Length: 292
Image (tube, rainbow, N blue to C red; front, side, top):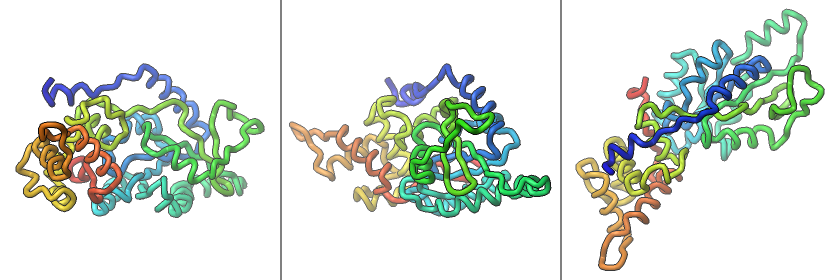
């Protein structure tokens, strides 16, 4: 099977997406705004384009998660790009908590007009409620655990809130609702599935791991060749194919098997692990100028 054929095979057609849309639409009535978590390394590929239609005119805050391993300049460009679209965006790292101090102030600013309307009606001190949305493996659980400290809100005494909904308290007057159902990414463009595979958002088994690492190396060579030169001592990586780069890296790292053959599978695992762990440097695979 050729590389192009393998890339086109990254598809997902979840039958329950319609059910998720329905549940989200129902739950939106219970919240004042939506927090969308995306991966800062692949901001557009890690979103579900249906979310904008589902959310409608509800205020929305975007968290660019894993921004600490994404290109700092690109983080700023994406934040600016989303701002131009009328969306507030914050670069954060949900695992370490970096950048999350700005979250609560950003929420209050986002919902300032709503709060003012309540105050005008005498509804002073009404709590704010948010829905947390994001595709699988984008950092939703890390965010909820970090912000709530594992504290679930009591829901039984609240009208309009069913026991099936997962509510979390994050400080005085602020509660979060975990997304009902699963919001899958869309793989209409084969590059979307590929980028999700690069970052580990979808299982490695979806594409041969050596092919995946070779494609990643080609992608990096085009925009971040200096990272490959620095880490693996590969000269002029942009002039080499992904497979040649993988073999070169394996040879330089002494990854050989019987007969002196290069263990490309072992090299592939290392390259993917090092990219995902930020060892290769701060890298964004979707440049803002490319997508905006």
